[in-house]
Length: 235
Image (cartoon, rainbow, N blue to C red; front, side, top):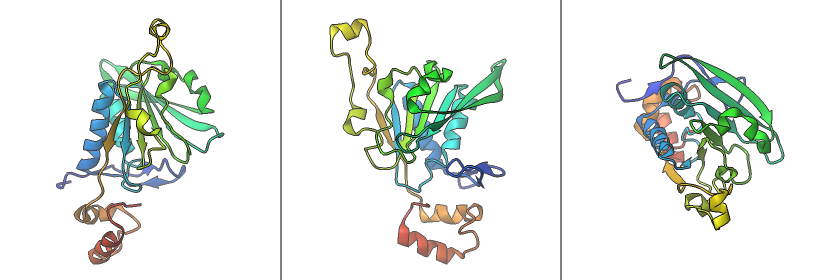
């Protein structure tokens, strides 16, 4: 629209509640957030996009997936982690490219333990991207120590447990001459980077109200009252 927001036509599958569908609104700030994550990833950094719960990180990740798969023609593996000890569902999105244009996307679904994810072909592809949402997982989701060839992007709330604390942003080099000859799974070519997502502004809530079924029937004054009460997290 004229305010720089993008609204996806029709309903989009709600990845947080399988079987349901939602309207997705993408702010300019969301685009900048995801574009920055992509840029740093292409430079070789593991990336963690962080922000307050409820600002739309998981919901707007459809923009990231489209940019990676359709825009950059990269195979992507996407998962929302479950509790430890449970199998996770991994979605492998593989672009079908004809004459330089994506004409289709092949989707493969795996319900496997995290320790088995190496069997997914795109995990072993230098051009691939592994995108992780911590979901309900209680520990670090930083899998960059597993020597996967795919680039790593994660999205998380402001809890450094999700990305393993300060170790994520450290450079991890080879610790011995032997590891130089035989690279260790604990090496990382570049330090991880954190990208921060922004809260919603009151005017953005009013603009997006027609697409948010929980508030679309409320007068603007009531919406702004709720905004002043809870702030810029829309959850």
